[in-house]
Image (tube, rainbow, N blue to C red; front, side, top):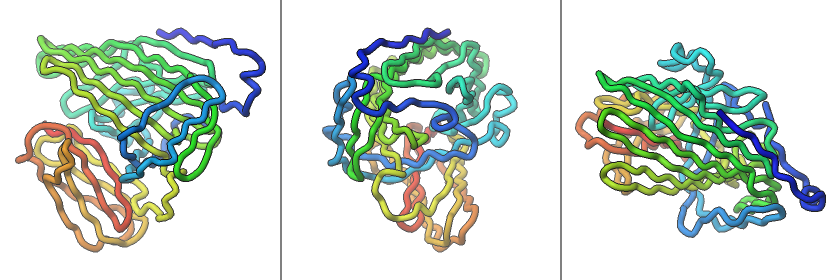
Length: 331
């Protein structure tokens, strides 16, 4: 269920600079797309104010490791048959998320993992098209799933607002953008346990790049053990100002969550040495494997993670000067 609002502004404000409008297929997800990003140091990085005519200066960002997120067809994933309305899928630390992406917008239809299939009865609408400064979209979502004999439910909301427009300054240059603020809450209940996940994401979009030029993400997970707070900053690799060609054109890992083994699949654009590392939340390397010189093409390996404590980790695959990474969960 959603409600779309259009804020009314003066003609002077709307014509002060060329306005960016998000649309499909320019900004919509299509199988074959790859979101290439570089992480950045989060210290002192804040989203800044909203409103039109803003200048957001992030010229001093310290750019870090690269990561690639491929947008794939649902049929190429393990759980695609459970989501017939999905048009694309993305793997992340929670599992494989399935999306409906078309001229109307972008929506989550479900989540597939080795332990359960979560299907949204009221889909999670993340974006509507066209979407310009002053537009907002508020929706609620519900889903259910079963783990062993327990029935789980998810409820929550997503509120997207194009709350700012103006100039974004990155180390590589200046860009005309709109900013979309996305506030999301997921309330999960499974048997006697439950937790609430809240996130606020600030995404800065240009008229020509499909994916945001910059994202600042605040995440809080509230459970019986208390809140956990996370912050991340990601920069679109297309404007990060790094000259080296990324030698990993695609990278994935499964299953996620993992318990015994973690499979790595990567596409190498050229021959080079390859190395895999697992780091814990403190950045400590807990597992490292050197694979030596590998030829261009598909690279596959399996990591033994059976002896690692349960928790969240980062998998990094290094090929020459390129680094791609994924967040993974070990149960």
